[in-house]
Length: 207
Image (cartoon, rainbow, N blue to C red; front, side):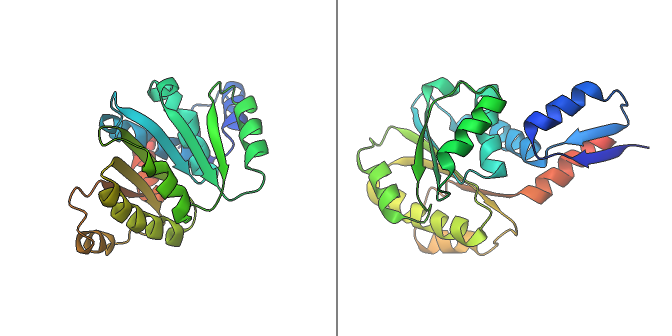
């Protein structure tokens, strides 16, 4: 028999893992597992022309995207931008980076991800050959969906190469239809549900 325990704090999990010798106990951080899976599945999006990597939402999942980017990719060549409306964004970033020994510089922007002015500013001076990868990973489906739809329209208007990876709690099956109606021909929006990926990976680990 195996026992699986969910530990959200990646630093605490690593400390426990070192002390626990019983292989029947599996310690997991679902956000860590899912972010690794998503980055590995989308390695092809990160080209030599990738300039900005934007993490929209710095909760449990956003932190793990930041943690795993330099583990999987050469993240030093990217301009990493973190946007979150939390007033303690700077202190959260500093604590998380310190605990996990992350030596990576980021631009921190304290703002709501639904702020259209922010995205317009990001895209304004970009060249068409530049590549931008955006992770929408707040815990609010409404924010992620509305931002996905707005970005799909904005990308076409500004002729920039953008790939959007968006998290949802429930898969919004209507999203592709909405994007099509807005004539976003490239459809460079990937969506995922954390629970579905976690269940698939968990089954692999315990079998």
